[in-house]
Image 1: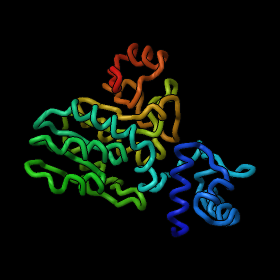
Image 2: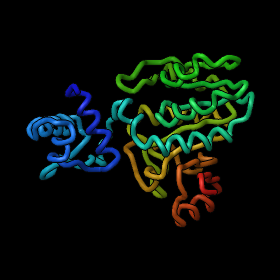
Image 3: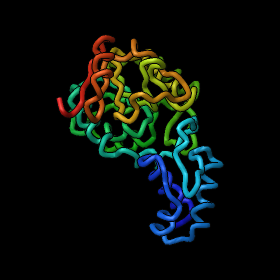
Amino acid sequence: MLAAERRNAILERIQEEKKVVVSELSREYEVSEETIRRDLDRLEEDGHIVKSYGGAVLNESNITELPHNVRRGVNTAAKQRIAELVNREIEENEHIFLDASTTSVFIAKNIKQKKHLTVITNSIENLLELSMVTGWDVISTGGQLKAGTMSLYGWKTAETLSAYHVDKLFMSCKGLSTERGVTDGNDETAGIKQAMIASADRVYLAADLSKFGKTAFSQICGFNKIDMIITDSEPDTAWKDFLAAAGIGLIYPEQ
């Protein structure tokens, strides 16, 4: 395994488990503990982790985007459950936005049996995923390719989004809290999602339960802009009461 591949694998692990231990990683990857420490040094320099005695923990305050291939491998079962629920919310012949989140890639994979849709997206991976589907209109927003994210951003992207009107938007986020609303990792990502919200009749937030109670760097919107939340498991009573009071629908597998 190359060093870059090993670091990505370590980053996947720490995203899921929130911490790692040097000795365990050394045994798993069959390299010296000193090599693992150098890997952790690099991940700490990039802002993804905070080193601790004998290991490292996730840097919860990190505002940089994780590499796309790392984000795609985190909470895959939850994203698949969400995508299956989203599939039920999409009708034939609708016009929809899909954002550039890794959750939306799972959604794209799950809706390909629909007979006809118009999909507008700033996700390169969504475009590739839907490239062989016949009978659909798949529209790229254009814009500047953001390194490591498989997504398009910038003024051209926002301008394209504002030229369309869609039935439904399906987007994800980095965090949602009752105090700070729906948040993402940076202003650029949040701005594109704001442009999508402005051009959609109904806004669906597709977010796994790990995002609940979290606050990321940049606000996308308040809960008044959200019509429905689709998640992978039943939220606690406090969240259900909060969303009900706000008039926001809630869908999860156990319903």
